[in-house]
Image (cartoon, rainbow, N blue to C red; front, side):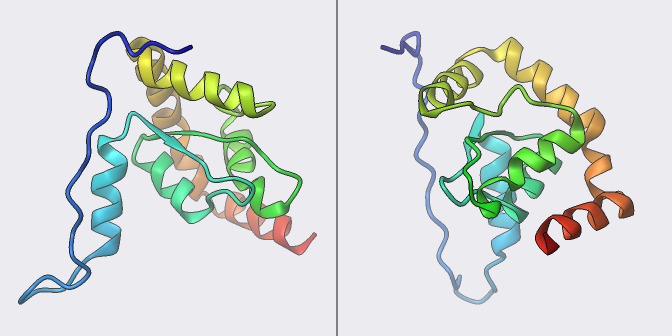
Length: 139
């Protein structure tokens, strides 16, 4: 159903040991390395990302999400809503696949969305925004 245009679009990255000999493993650094090479990050379902989504967005990675009824499945939606960006929020599972494939194969769309997210990402770290996220969990 989906064509990747003959390109090798999947890259298997080497894993890093949890404890490198003679030096400590830095999970945050490893995660940042992975997020910056991904064209698209798929939010998990039914419990989506929170900190991981926030970090991905701050690094300019695109996160495709399918919000669930559970509060933990709606955090990526909330982050995108705060940014005023809904292009990567799917309405149903089929839409999730379509959005992921389109974002992964359309370089112009990907760059456009990355620029929009980059221009607005600082708003995610605004103290008022942090209070707003905290209020979501209090509900």
